[in-house]
Amino acid sequence: MVTVMGMIFYLSHQPGDFVKLPQVIAVDKLLHGIAYALLAGTFLYSLQPFTHNSNRAVTGIIVTVFCLLFGISDEIHQAFIPGRFVSAWDVAADGCGALLVVGLWYRKSARKRTKNYS
Image (cartoon, rainbow, N blue to C red; front, side, top):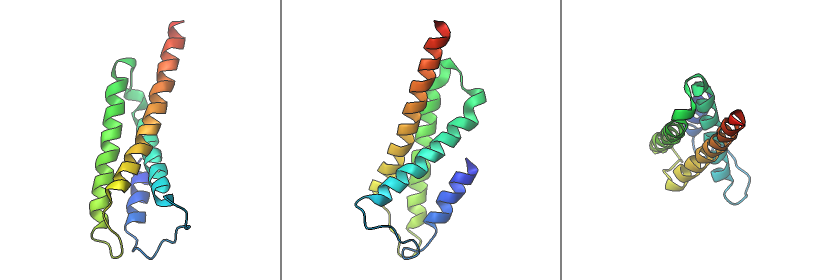
């Protein structure tokens, strides 16, 4: 998880002209979503020993909120980097990536729970 956070910080610390993205519509939002999906996945993995059936929803909320707060802090950080700017749409893409992984995790853990009761 810390490695993914470091990777996100490193990439957001690069000047605006450092990274050349393909001229595809919303490719930067897709990359934000992937990065924060990875962050959410590694966070969920790190919490695995502490996650039980009774606290799955709370765990999902904590992971999603954490990813959103990290995304907001990353956007604030970018405000101080030449050629970079703050974007609420980037935070929205971050949240969507995290929410997608948390939703898939929650669904998978719910299936596993019902399978164990069968």
